[in-house]
Image 1 (cartoon, rainbow, N blue to C red):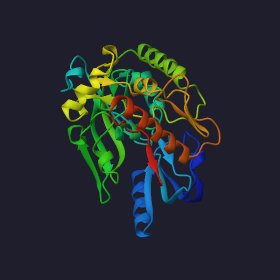
Image 2 (spheres, helix red, strand yellow):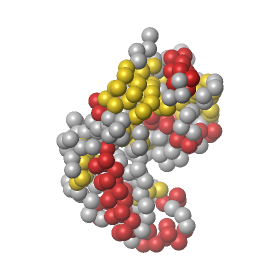
Image 3 (cartoon, helix red, strand yellow):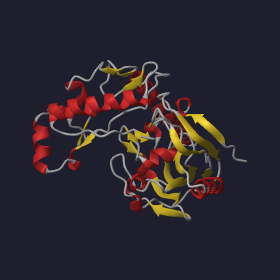
Image 4 (cartoon, rainbow, N blue to C red):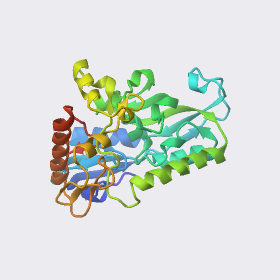
Amino acid sequence: MMKLRKNYLMSGFTTMAIGGPAKFFVAVKSESELVAAIQTAKAAKLKWCVLGEGSNLIVADKGYEGVVIQNKIQKFDLSPNPLSISPYPHLRRGRGRKVTIGAGNNLLKTIIKLDQLGLSGLEKMAGIPGTVGGAVYGCAGAYGQEIKDNLLKVRFFDGRKIREFSRERCRFGYRTSIFKKNKDWIIVAAVFRFETGAPARLLEASRKIIKLRAIKYPPGLRCPGSFFKNIKLVDLRPVSARNSFVKKLPHEKIMYGKVPVGYLLEAAGAKGIRSRGIRVAAHHGNLIYNAGRGRAKDVRDLAARLKALVKKEFGITIEEEVQYLGF
């Protein structure tokens, strides 16, 4: 049974530990509960939003005057038999296994489980915070892997009924998807096809990535992960602006058609900048964290300053990877 909470303090929910109260908060564990919660909010003429674990979220200091629905749908169904050879080029060498994964599953726990089952494809994404649904929503990726690479289809609620889209229909791009453009479409599950591999090798690969990420994001640090998106050069328009930008960069800073926004921020002097309790880390320009008693207003103020610095130095506008709520 769903438990409705009133005036739920969002600072205890988000990884940055900031944000005022949500008027109502409820966690749902099934598709039927999710649909019921959304329909109830609509019937009461209340604003609503669906969240995962709050890892990529900045909630306003005044809170959210509506219903926050936490998606905790944790289905994990493994097809009983190996599938035929995959139609996707990167899976053609072996026989895959199909897995249906609920959107509310924690991403790291899911990756470790897949590693243990000997299913390859997400092991290098270990350590990315949040849920599987959030990773699909934002087309998360790291170290050459993206959530979309092994995805077959996405199951979602469009406000009227449950639907399914193939990977192609999801319009995945760099840190984006069709679901970012249709925020009322709520992901409930994703179906993947993974190639088989050696569990020990996959677990070791994930552990190495986790150790690397711990250097940048020490355990307990109150931050949302990378704050701004890296720059995908092909997305810069017009071409003249792209060419002008590239001329300002050292050649080695362009990797796989992208430029790390951390480099741009550091070159613009962002390291160590602060706005009250919110700071840019001294060791990485794209790491913004709550050093103590930080507020959402401070985050927004600091983000605006950083965007202005990069604009002045490089002539481009960087974009937040985090999501804002209640502003």
